[in-house]
Length: 175
Image (cartoon, rainbow, N blue to C red; front, side, top):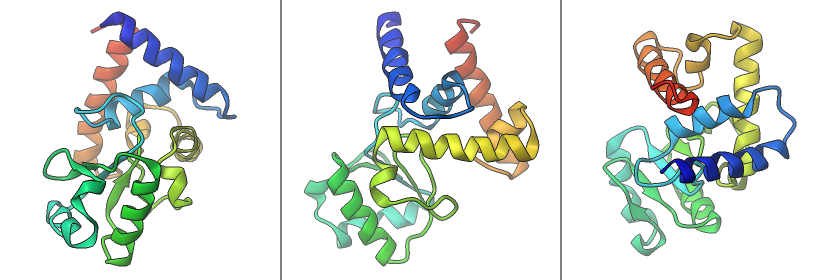
């Protein structure tokens, strides 16, 4: 288990080091851990999560089920970047605006990028870095400000802070 974690951290660090970002890779890795789907490894980029569970029911009318695997009642694995972009396009055309995309579960309603970028680990790291940099500049550096990556609403922010602290503790070996 520890060997897998070390490999993931080293691989993530290598990808991260390609980007210019003032947010440390440990922070980005912790966010990626919190945002990952429990059925996929940290950094797996081919995930679409629907923030309203009734929206995922519309998916089978939009694309063939062979293009994705339903992971739970709100998330799918779209298997590759091409499928993800196609599915995201169909979702957007059908007025389903509240989804989270890729390894960092970025909501395009609030953070626009090219569709391909959401499903590329390297590009989504850069997007997440930009989001966190803006938050840091506006609110400073605290658990509450880091949790604004997920939510500005107090109840959701507090819940996300607990997740961040838990994963940061695991990363540091203090849990």
